[in-house]
Amino acid sequence: MPSTKQRFPSARVAILAVVAAVGLSACATYDDEFAGINSRLDQLDTRVQGAAQSAESANQSAQQANQRLDQLEGRVQQLESSPRRTPRG
Image 1 (cartoon, rainbow, N blue to C red):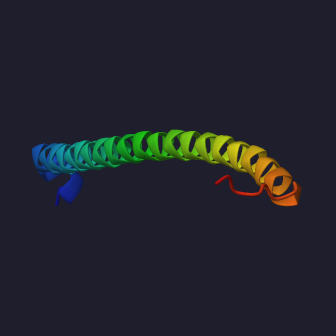
Image 2 (image 1 turned 180 degrees about the horizontal axis):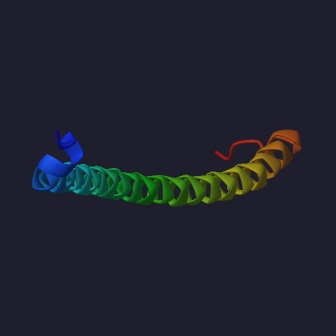
């Protein structure tokens, strides 16, 4: 009696072809998923960089405002410590 391997060689080839096709289609699906994830990560990276730039700009503005306040504080202290002027009239 002939063995099963010898009787159905075309069936084995067909099964291997189906398995290979399913495997390749799964890879394509994963490639699509990875592409979507990478796209989302790129979007998030762009948003984070924009937020970092905004934060840096806000920090610089705050430092400039603090410098102006320091200058004004010195002037206010000078005016408060100076002798009071008598009103005219």
